[in-house]
Length: 196
Image (cartoon, rainbow, N blue to C red; front, top):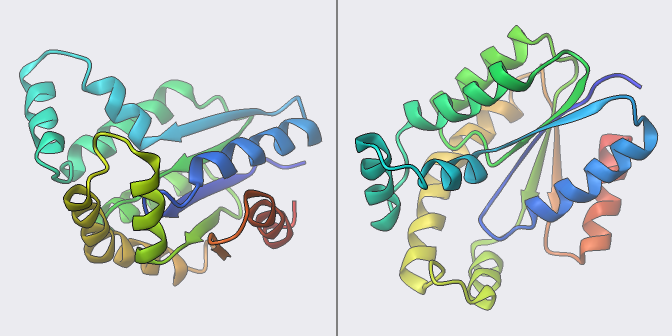
């Protein structure tokens, strides 16, 4: 089995994390000799905010005000993960990247640099309404109606152009997944469309 590259992208609450976990298990079952490099922008940022430097404080202020992190910082975090963790014998899974068009362009350069063949974009497609209902149902402190609206607005404004960029680049296998199904149905659709 060749090393696979998957870029999971979708609105907040679409179930990316759950589907990545399920896919990772399938990949491990198929070939336990190939590792998995999981690059999570959200996870990287949450770890980053635990630090206490000037940069960390400025970044935390942005998130506390419901803003979107600057591109240089997000690219630095996932770029650092790649430089540190890539060994040439792993599947590569991105979670929540890219978030803007120019980040998609930088990600494209990383995919080419690491000579990743047949990268697949898994677009977890859910409506704003479905996403809002799901996020409100989680009951997290950062999931109030105003914060959710901000996140969904920036998805429409910033992330959709990045998705279109990847969708229209012949380098990528782009799969559009109906995320408004049960976990099992979503997983089955993903497995079928990525031909795992």
